[in-house]
Image 1 (cartoon, rainbow, N blue to C red):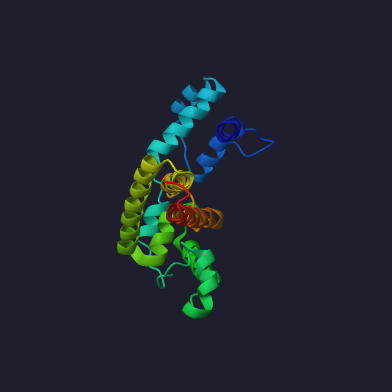
Image 2 (image 1 turned 120 degrees about the vertical axis):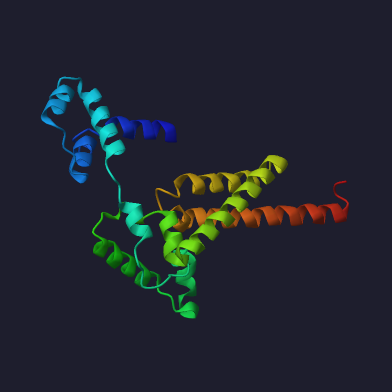
Length: 216
């Protein structure tokens, strides 16, 4: 279903009734302009070929300064988890004194002052940097990689539903971290917590049944 949906979006993204033409959007965003002779060559081709060529030229020749701007930006202070785990930090706000809303406002101010569009800031990696700085973000990525590898190995060994689902969540996290703030998605966080609880509860029940002699 997801593949079909993504295929539909890819095919319909240039439909004016649904969205702005992607090529036009990219051309304006990156202030892209070809020499007259090159533009004449492209204009003589099929519309789909034109779109593919212009997109390719923009992607390979334009500097996307979004994330590089973010890395060198100076931040007022680290948000200590407010960006990565907003649901948890909202519950702990009376104890920590760290305001999730305040952290988001600070992020918006820095984004506005940097002079770039906001897309490069809304990633899980940038949330790590906001929360813990560059060194802390590197450490968090390293630990996440170790955890994901361990869970994948465990899911292959046990074939248990909870372990398989945790492995899938780890894969989702790795795949979408550079694109969206996947680590701050409450539904994924709660699903992961339920899987951990379910795995623990299953193990406890199995031990109880062994002790009672129900199974050998």
